[in-house]
Image (cartoon, rainbow, N blue to C red):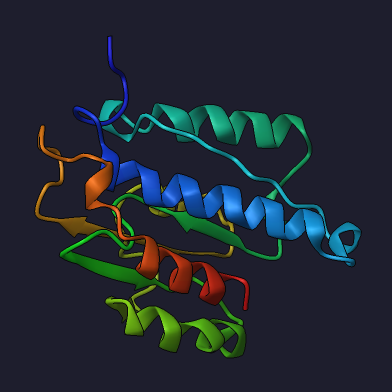
Length: 169
């Protein structure tokens, strides 16, 4: 039985997963990669009461990862940089606006609208903010969201590449 997503979720999930993998590769290639500890967490289950976030929070706690030890949490949500999408960049409770500003313009060029409204977010990002993590993230909607026709053809590789460059800022 499917416990996450609706149907194939090509536009809903694939761009975020691709960007997540690209960021992991990028971090691994950085010469200063050992200056920080990076956690790449892929959780799922927001359709069933955010079960994945609950499990992630338990795991983080078991590893001693608490909000005070995390510089920032980047949430890559659903439907980022798909064809015909409406994307939002949520700045959450970030206090490092200069860093955020470095990638707001490139993300705006691919269709993201900045939302500066603190904890008023959707998806799993809200859970991390409520847990006290300094967090920001992105997610969107597109015409095929939660529809059977949401295939990989709804992803937009060109926009994804620009978004990837922006997140490395």
